[in-house]
Image 1 (cartoon, rainbow, N blue to C red):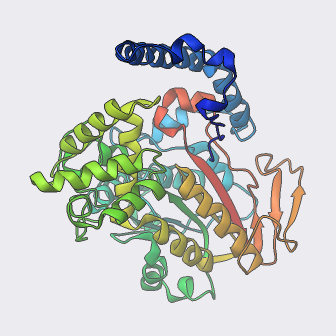
Image 2 (cartoon, rainbow, N blue to C red; image 1 turned 180 degrees about the horizontal axis):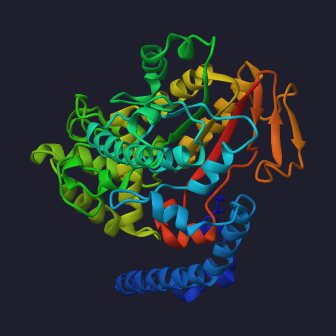
Amino acid sequence: MATAARRLVPFHLRPASARPLAAVAAAPHSRKRDAVSCKSTGKTRAKNKAKDTTMWRPQRRELEEHLKRRTRSAGAFDPGLYRRHSHSHHVPVLLGEVLAAFRRPLPLRSFVDCTLGAAGHSLAMMEAHPEMELHVGMDVDPSALEIGQRHIEAFLASRATEEGGEDALQGTLRAYTHVKNFKYIKHVLGGVDESLADGSSGVDGILIDLGMSSMQVNRSDRGFSVLNDGPLDMRMDPKATLTAEDILNSWPELEVGRILRDYGEESNWQSLQRRIVKERKTGGLHSTGELVKLIQRTCTISGGRQGWIKTATRVFQALRIAVNDELQTLEDALHSCFDCLAPDGRLAVISFHSLEDRIVKQTFLELISGDEADDDDEDLACADIDNEDEPWFKQRVQGTNGTVLTKRPITPSQEEEKLNQRCRSAKLRVIQKA
């Protein structure tokens, strides 16, 4: 956002009242005293500015809360649902809202969880849809997939016992897991059933949860945590070659700055860029702790009203996006997922920052219009629909190839935010194929 320009009036054009004659005629030895006076005045102004900032923070919070109310989930919060499907590894986000997105008169016979993790969403979908015949779970992180696979096996085993034996259940639900990035969904589904990937059949529902799981953040050896020291890794796929350490210590200075500016949306990117490159002369950065200390020193010098933790969070986000090529991967995956949907099939995406949400929003509009979309696309019809079965999808955008069911994204309820603070920035968008 552009900063309001401040008009600077040359000293010789200022009114006489602002420039007393006594000050002009002062002896040379008084200039040092004046300089000290200016410094103290500057400090006073800085303190007053800080006080003024605190005065309008409540109003800003009130405005943010007003904007959130426009998108907050209107569904009844079910704490029991979260207790059943949360684990020590991870708490699924917008769980009730995801279930609502796929709860409709049409049966959900096939479902793909593109980011399986601990399988919280998948288990809730299996529980809510006993008619499900095929479940495919994908995750680029093998350790996360292993945990999710164990949870699914335990769930299916318990349900088989209730339904009278494993043989009865095997004929009802086939469950597969694959260590793959979700951009390869066509390849994965083609391996299960060719008709699912070539568009002749398709799947009824697909979910993508773009959030970092607690089991990834809490492991310091992965390099995702701001608060725990570890290697500068940040790879979602352990088999990938590029790491955050490579970027910080060997990429061109301008490219490092671009990453901080574009992927982290960090206003202080130039100062951070210079300090990161300067560190290379003394051996470079090799741990998250060293990077955090550099950020702390930079924030101390340049100031900043939000503190070093928020700056560090933005820097870590920028590096993680660059290491995993997350934005381009997301855009490619959205197109592939939409191609794999059956007619009337739905794709739900949970994003956690503005860069992701912007891509999801724009790509959804492109998908339903069949062309590059913009905000003034005349081929798209916005409609307010009063549907008793789906009250959370009142505002929709209708296109030739489908419907965006969430003109505005759905955000967590206040009750869910109290239960899980990490869900605060989550946004759910849903698209339905024609």
